[in-house]
Length: 444
Ligand code: SF4
Ligand code: SF4
Image 1 (cartoon, rainbow, N blue to C red):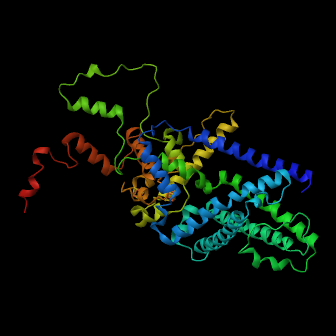
Image 2 (cartoon, rainbow, N blue to C red):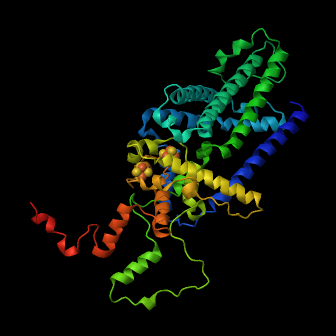
Image 3 (cartoon, protein in one colour):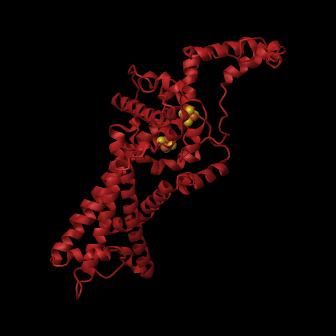
């Protein structure tokens, strides 16, 4: 590599990481648009969750075929990228296989990278077949029409290309290492259990041509990694980074436990307790903005719900387990997460375009993205939460939006309104007084 190459490489690296840092800043800013929620409790359980679910992929293997293939791709992604360190040092300082001095350990490392790269290639091809040939139901669901479907395929193509380039780079390097008497700086280093079978394709080519090809593979490989890293911002693939904080900050309470609104709880307690002193309540701040019940837009959700939206992998496990979706209702918990993310991105772009301030755009998450029909189809069974491999809760968003419909707009379905009136008047969901509640046993 010439000095010019080293400088070009440094520029490419700075640009790649610079753009990525800008995207990360935007994601953090957008997540912070959410309402605060305290998730600092019980750090031990949180670390354990993260280790087990994000790192250990424990929920992925509930569906063994996809789970095992995913673990291969995930391990490949993490381990093969260790090689990135060597690539960066070689690129910046013009060295060649700078870690070769590790000897046997280096050979074992490169050998295992190659085997993993091959396994990743196979796993990614199987994933592609499941999506495009077998067409599993959760991958052809209308939620994924348009960009999300292409996005899933782009990621698979990216991974196929990166792994192929990695193996080709090694194969051409190996070819040059084996030139009798040595060639240029290609000294013997590494073991190549997979690319040794690819290397013969370079036989018959001049050494200069193979060297040029090695450099092309090398540049395309590193450029591909940087492009892939920057593509994450636009893709569902963000989960490879966000699964970790997402599982850490997930709700630790038992499923089915809902948040009570403090102000409403106080009111109810005052109503129920004849000895309560209504004037003992905290003084009211006349200047405070009136609190809004529930959520109609992304800024009303809490920051963990917004983090959930960015983390969603669009795998559809939630939707395939959702009884409402299975029985033909309009609801898809995956779509709830995708819509939340889309709206959050839209709000973020609005802020960027208006010098850091959100200018109302006459749109909201409710109605423009998620309809009341979808929200009311939910049975609140928690199947989606249970199924999600990264501990996302579409249900919590559904509930907050329903709360808005009921408490801010009195827009509950008629059957619910009747039930709530009965609870208010009779202390029970039925249309008769409490004294008559055991009458049913006298009937027959
Ligand atoms: S909680 Fe609602 S959205 Fe989730 S699986 Fe059950 S019905 Fe579907
Ligand atoms: S919410 Fe979870 S289960 Fe549903 S699509 Fe997203 S990642 Fe998959």
